[in-house]
Every structure is written in structure tokens, then in C-alpha cells.
Length: 475
Image 1 (cartoon, rainbow, N blue to C red):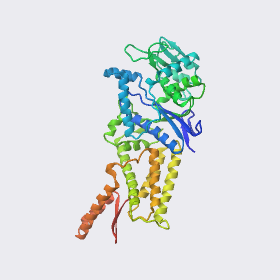
Image 2: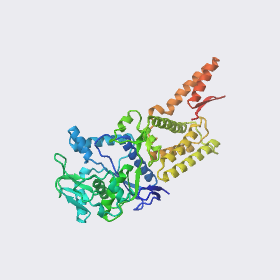
Image 3: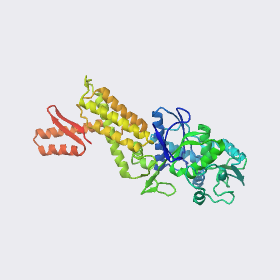
Image 4: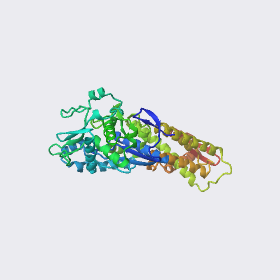
């Protein structure tokens, strides 16, 4: 059974959706004031895989990912560029979707924008004021943390720690220093909307609660985002949402780990980040995605070109195996055997073993890191087959379908990189074999052996027989 690590309870729990087969899933989307970096990619790829696996297991997933197009950072950046804030956010929203397409991250069912939900946000705030959970001072509206039940339960912080935390904004107008803004009074020259409290705009936390509840209802199955959102963002979402509905806001809280550089969190504020577009100039989207999935979503990833190179090489071996299967399936002379050969039995045993191990790993809190060895073992088995392997078309197709299943879940193996096609490799190896045979006929044994040794170093074994020279990949 699928188990998920719940940040709220700090333990793995059996996954049981609230409404039968339907899963409501909300993930905090980008604040669109700049190009997305690899840290963002890590989060959105992780939740894309979570969604894909839930769907593979038969759940109907309603996936909502917001676009924060109204925010202090957007206003500040727009001022720097002398650009309208909504125009700037629209431009970077389009750039964000381009990046996600390159990484094969599927679009959410709905991508609601803050600027399209101002009336709902105002209505939400009015209800909180009416019920005594919020108050207005000089055009600003604040949530009263002292009125919230179990505030700090997600981040597992005491009131004393929250008060001492650097993230608490000092504001003399607030009744309690822990209180957070639901509505911000517009400063001169800032973008604003009319409200019962004057011209202003929503607070960050309020935006997500409003859109999550509007599209998924008062209780959500899964809410996710990066670990940096646990406090204050998600903690505040819980407080205002549960005060508004009187019900538990989220059943399973999921948070992904950071991408680091030299063990330090990658972030725009620190200036130590690579945008997705920058990395795409050196590596294709599948390689980047595969690199990210080689670590469990909760663990940190230390970014390096070396790890991306390793991911690229592993992907090449997997694509070689996939294309080898396709080539063998297409062979016209392949006939079905009455009895499966030893090779076929061994291959099918590895297929079943890999499927079982892959699914067990994914059922263990979507552990893509532990799922990878299952793919690697199957790949080694396929690449060790030679072109004369006595394996039925049905067995080959079953093996290929297993790769397709893994690829659909992980969002990889969808297209063959041009430079890694088995056909191209095969043609080059055939040319070298022909050259080697010519040297052997001319009794130039040293040169012939040199070709064989170099191919062996590249992971290609040549075997001489009465029928001629055959080759197979050994690593």
C-alpha cells in the first residue's frame, strides 16, 4: 500500500483519500518576477511524478497549482524595470511554462492567478473579521494568531520560538507581533484593488488558502511545496483556512528538499542559482529531470555538472536498451518458440523483479531514488542480449512495455535523444567490425586487436563465430 510521509505528523501514513478514488492536490506555484531556477524545477518535477504515480495507481487527481502574480517581489522588480507589474508577471509566467514543457512537467488541471481571484479573497477576509479571527488597522488587515487553534503544529514550533524567529515582521500597528497580513494597504504608486478597507492587495498566505478552498473544497488530500514554505507560509495557511471553515485544512502535507550548491541552499536572494534556461543550454530537459529524480524528493540535492554528466550517460544506456528492444521486435525473421529459451526466461524473471522493486520503492513515499536500481538491472539485462538472442516477440514487447510504464511514471524515456540512437551506434560498430575483418584478412593482427580492445573499453564486446562477428553491449 502507498505510504506518504506527512510533515504534519512527522511519520509515514497509509494513503487513504478523503473522497474514495478522487485526490485533491494543491501545490504552491511560482511567484513570477524572474526566470525559474533549478530549485524550482526540483519541486515541480517531484510533484509531477507524485501526480503521475497516483494516476498510474488508478486515482483521479485534481491538481491545482497557483500562479502568484501579485506580490512585493513582483512590485519591486517591476519598479526596477519601469514595467507594469501584471505585464511583468505575465511575461515570466509564459517563461515558466516554457521551462516546465522542456522538463516534461504536465500542466495542472487549473493554474489560478491571484489577480483573477480578488473578490473571493476579499470575501474570505471579511468572513475572518466577522468571526473574530482578523482585525483591520489603518487599511491593513491582520490575522490574529492568538485566536488560531494549534498554531505552529505544522512546523512544530512553540509560541516562544515563533516570537523569537527572524521571520516575524516587526510592525507597531499589529496587536501581536506574530500576526500576519491578510490585506496590505497600497503604498503610493503601487498596484491596488478597491476593498472595504481601502485600496490595497492580498497578503501572500491568503492567496493560496482562497484558491485551494475554491477549487478543491474545505479539506484537501495533499498540499505541497518546498520545505522553505512550511513556516510561515503553510503554517499561516492552516491557521486562516481552519478558522474560516472550522475543518482540518489538509490531510497530507508533502514538502520537498532543497537544491544546494556547495551544501548551501540555492536561492535568488543568495544569488547562487542557475536558471532552468541556463542549464538547458548545456543539457536536455530529460537529463535534468533524470538528475533530479535520482534523489528522493525529501532529500537535498547538491547541484554539479558532474552529476548531470553521470545522469546523461545513464540515460544513454537506458535509451540504448529501449532501442535494442525495438530493433529486435522489428526483425522480420524472428519466429515464436514453442518453449521459451533460457534467455527469455531470465529476461522475463528480471522484468517481473524490476517491476516489483520499482513499485515497492514508489509505494514507499514516492522513493524514486530506490526505484532507479530496478531500471538499471533491467537495462543491464537487455543490453547484454546479442542480436541472435532467442527471445519471443511477446517477451520483448512485455519488456518494452515495462520501460514505458516506468517512463510514464517518471516522465522520462518519452523520446530518444538524437545522439543516442541504437541504429547509429550499430552502424558505427558494424563499420568497425568490417574494418577489423579486413585487417585480419591482411594479417594485421595488432590493428585488428586494437579495434577490439577499444570497443571493449567502450562497453561493446565482439564475439567471433562461424557465422561471423556479433557484438553486444556489456555495460
